[in-house]
Image (tube, rainbow over all chains, first blue to last red):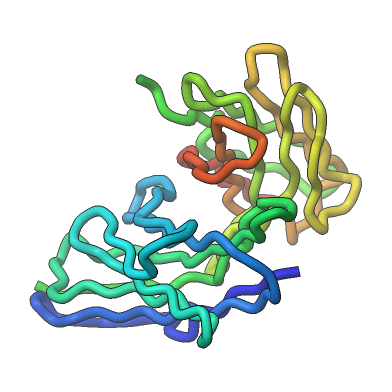
Length: 114
Length: 113
């Protein structure tokens, strides 16, 4: 079974600061990787996903993530955050060729001060 | 195009009672998955329905059961409620059984007292 670790549980930044949220997974096979975002009072929505190909994936709202297979990592980045990026961020992984059921990390709460 | 909808939004129940939560998938989607999200945690997979059958199940007791209807909508039933069942229950739909990309509903907040 796969597992996901998000080491930063709470992150506080000022606007225009750069963001990097860590995500590491544990699984021996091929995986699909996701980042979801949950804005205050809103539903969980997909930010970006990686299935195959270029390990640098660009998502919505200026976010990107890089899949480093050797490190089992899929870190989320944004060069300059905005107050509107305040949200909960979840990394998820599913096993390709397996159940395809995603396993989520416990999430990172990001607060951006204006 | 309506996304995934869930009802009710909030629910308060007493220990030992039973509850039914409902979900309508996004238009064009035929697969529905249910998740439990405890406070401060990520969503945990409960089960998935496709073609009106439970196809996969997570590590949840039999008190958690579900159903999918011919129009692809789904229900989650929880019997003999425990305090620990208090959580946000999320429904997600996808277009195929593989579920590469899931669309989530707003959730039902269940409080058990």
